[in-house]
Amino acid sequence: MDNYIIEMRNITKEFPGIIANDNITLTLKRGEVHALLGENGAGKSTLMSVLFGLYQAEKGEIRKNGEVVKINNPNDANALGIGMVHQHFKLVEIFTVLENIILGVEPNKMGFLEKSEARKKVVELSEKYGLKVNPDAVIEKISVGMQQRVEILKMLYRDNEILIFDEPTAVLTPQEIEELLQIMRGFADEGKSILFITHKLNEIMQVADRCTVLRKGKYIGTVDVKDTTKEELSKMMVGRDISFSVDKEPAEPKDVVLSVRGVTVPSQTHKNNAVKNVSFDVRAGEIVCLAGIDGNGQTEFVSALTGLEKMTAGTITLAGKDITKASTRDRSKAGMSHIPEDRHKHGLVLDYSLEENMILQRYWEPAFQKNGFLKFDAMRKYTEDLVEKFDVRSGQGPVTIARSMSGGNQQKAILAREIDKKHELLVAVQPTRGLDVGAIEYIHKQLVERRDAGKAVLLVSLELDEVMDVSDRILVMYEGEIVGELDPKTTTVEELGLYMSGAKRNTVKEINHAG
Image 1 (cartoon, rainbow, N blue to C red):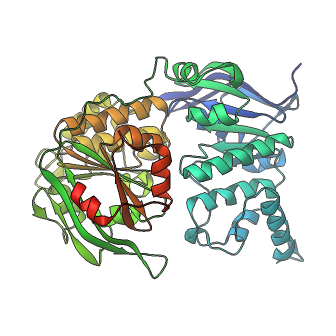
Image 2 (cartoon, rainbow, N blue to C red):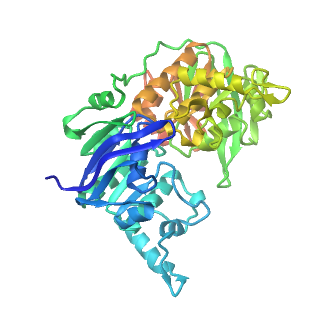
Image 3 (spheres, rainbow, N blue to C red):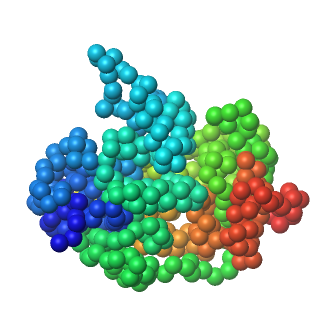
């Protein structure tokens, strides 16, 4: 018999209106990296939440080293050596790194908190595994990649031997992803067992030993990664062949829709400006991509563009109208649609229903209200139409609470709302972050359709494949400045990387001339 450290046998977990896990069996060997692959909403996170004690299964059993165990809560899971890094981190933002790591297992002497031994252990662990963090840094002040390291150190501090990673690379830069995959491989090599939820096929091929595929809550199969291909895995995942290239005709740009001149935005974290004197145009019928390594001013630029943050200099014109001082609502009314970087913070009201979220930017229109009272029938019909058109999957249709939907379906809901709203410019920031190949293919098609319908699209992306495949023009942002304008048809990923790292730059004259 195989040496299984964990067996989940015939697990069934139900929620109102949906069977999230339908009789699923998953086995984990000691010292392996086991990938769990599936579309958004396939039931991957639910299955791992059952193993971690966040949910209780209606049917089935869990065994550790062949013995049946009962996991009622995460404390039980920790006692069994099971740890989990969640897709949306579970950190207290105003606490330090050290305080977050020891939270719940605080070392104390006579009732007094003893941090010195804990600090020593955290520093030793971070050095041993190459997870360099500052124990005294406050969580809200450090990057997302650093926050993830804190989550990993939480597991190591508790001496967990079974490590669950839920979509761990969804919010990381390419460099951070590479580091994380090496760390995971290192864990497996020293005998820890890894469960790795993902829908990035390249990462599975690079780091996993075996892969179990779920589709719509059902078990499809388990394969040895060395004996399979990306194409076979994607077909198991979505039930059809997937195109990994973006199908599009050459762009035919027309009039300027967005004109940005001399935009400067202050930084929230240091004295320098986050965005420095940025100027460019986006025309109807083209997709312009703002590319760059995370933290080079893209987030602040988009916040200023969409009216969420103040600029200190510059002008913004949308469809011939000066919107420099316009409110976010007025920018929306003037023809700007925005798929935000953080779908939870700026995209949805998580405790509202799907239908309430779908009319967030339109509830005052006569179609949805009369004399200040909402027309609920109209809201529901509108949401049902969008759900069908954009394939948004949810347990209870329009009345589903947004928080209960999978990340990918939350993203599809935002996309549906923003594309259906009357717009001239679509600002799409990381639109495929954390999505499966089927959803990525779908969203890329939607962006190209917007372009072909004569709309202007400004794409902001960290994914190099996406930048190269979807864009008609690439503007590279480095340390708050546009350092290059590239044509994806004539440039290479290596050249793009040199611009993104600041090793290479065009002159501003060339950029303005090309624009």
